[in-house]
Image 1: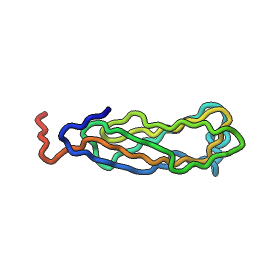
Image 2: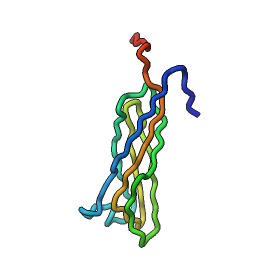
Image 3: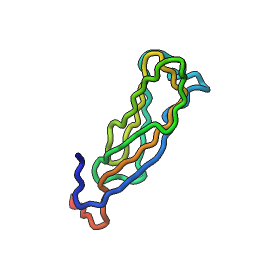
Length: 116
């Protein structure tokens, strides 16, 4: 459980296209075996401490002739951003993926002192 102190809480959100490989025949659309795409995401303003990031698929364009295998997660969360990571494997074919994310965490207050 993430507990917040007396600092203000900020919520940032956005959407990112992780990849679109149908038109150019990229590995996600034509390949087999393990495949991964990462996209760095930057928050609109820094958080005071690394926030909690919730991420989900907001658009997917997939081939339905095989099983859909996918993993979507946020990695390397810092005060300024995170990596959106999508993985698939075997014979799953993905044309494109767009994700929506929300970050919730402590933000600096104008009365905070920096004594370093």
